[in-house]
Length: 226
Image (cartoon, rainbow, N blue to C red; front, side):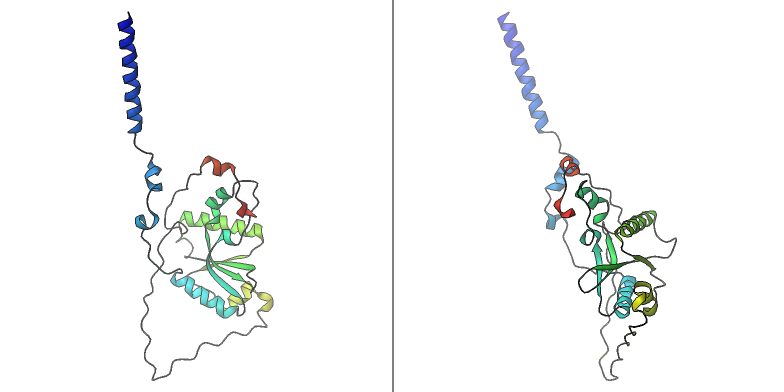
């Protein structure tokens, strides 16, 4: 009988040791390997343009229409909106805060006066883009910030842009004159390659799924919410 119990004990020890070995060899979760990747080595960065061709034209229109005002480009909503911290700030940031306003009009104290969003013609945008635009418009309206949607193939004139954004100053501010043409003997300017910005998670063309939040992030509040 003692020999039988000894064999049973040895067999139990072997089973436990085998189970522990198998657990150590269990493959890592899908996200474990990504967290160990080096940021620069895994995603080698390169500089590119911030604005598309239509956004650059809209920016130039605003500069001429609103001299004395500050025009900012591709500003994340989290930079000029603050929200209560009753619920998780990280969750709000995931839903909306990282989305960018194409152009933001500010006074010289950087107080936001209006947001301009440059969109493709009606029907050319994706369903994802329409949802993003509607969500942004709803949030900006709640914050009391006017939002104007411009179509990239039918941008307003300088006068129309001024009347749209600053109607009270439209009559008082003259339209700045266009820059004088180059002298006849001036060397021709070198051609500039007009490259479009790449897609990213802040743009609608890149179909990026939502990032799951850790349990402590869903419960906690971030002091940046203000």
